[in-house]
Amino acid sequence: MKRSIVVLTSAILFLVATAASAGETTKAPEVGQEFPNISLPFPEARAHRDYLGLQRGNSFGLSQVKAEVVIVEILSMYCPFCQAEAPKVNELYAMIENDEKLRGKVKIIGIAAGNTALETDLFRKKYDVPFPLFADGDFVLHKAFGEVRTPYFIGARIVGDRAMVFHSRLGAFDDPASFLSLILEESGLQNAGGRPE
Amino acid sequence: MKLNSKKTIIYVFFFSLFLVFLSPAPSRGLSDAFSGTVYEPKELKPVDSILKVSVGDRAPDFELPDLSGSTTSLAQYLGKNVVISFVPAAWTPICSDQWPGYNILKDFFEGYNAVLMGITVDNIPSLYAWTKQMGDLWFPVLSDFWPHGEVADSFGVLRSDGTSERAIFIIDGKGIIRYIDVHDINRRPPLETIVRELEKLK
Image (spheres, each protein chain N blue to C red):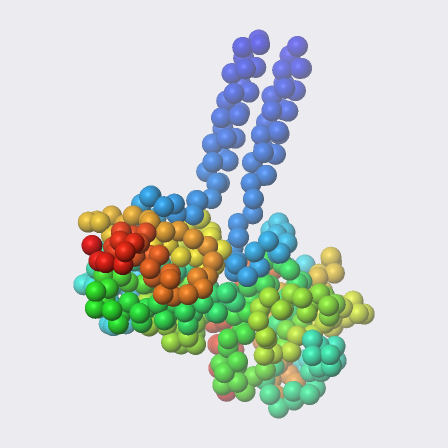
């Protein structure tokens, strides 16, 4: 009799625990781990496809981006800190593009969490965002990133067909130049002395 | 003995269920601007009021205190399209991430000869502290605090707990209601629907 109680109660505990873990949300990307396996739609704008070095297709993964390092910003049109950060991220983009040692090696994309296509487009127009932004209206991508608050920056190093996270941090950066140095250092793209590897 | 074992199983089952529901609520893409200051309610009843106006009706006029220290009335905007955004309450998750988006769309609303008006049932000091986190808002924010929720109630969007619905009313230049969206309180209305309706008024 006692044994049957033990068996039954453990069975119930097991079932409930399984249900609990199934409902558990994904964690934010961790440094040293592989970048979440997400699928992004092919950008409509030719300039964006060229920037990312994509050929043909309907969707792509981060490791397909032709770059050594990809900086991913998770943002929202509805987030005041992201609005304030937008000109700084544009500045970061310009610093990379104007540096011939970095151009083509370091790229930026934005994922607009919970924003529809129109909302994402309005954000792009408002701040003249030069790099590709991807609408995530139904929070599918946002869930894969552990539902982080915005803005959130992830740095990934592309190695073959894998994208490895080397930077994962919540919040705006103050100064684009120091953020870029940090990214170059953490990614190993440039050593701390400032000389390219 | 038999009874006791059944009881044990039932207790274990309910205790485990209780543990499952302790898991924290998702952030819903909330801006870091509100980190730690926003109250996270559980999923609420999507709509909890009965509309008192319909499309084609003249909008009930109102005059409410606004954040500038003055008052704003609906009548003062005759000749312009008015988009009224009722949000349930200050310091709640979806609302905190709704008006900041509208805040970068001044040109966009003006392009439709439209003004935006934000209304909640909070008092002015509470609204002031909350909207400060959003930067300077270009549109008037009105307090429907006293008599509590009177304006919300005149439209039929006052919920039974004293908050208002998350609702959008579009009123044309003649004061006629042209569009109503009493949205699921747990979701943010997409901008696409506002654009679609303003297009019709062009």
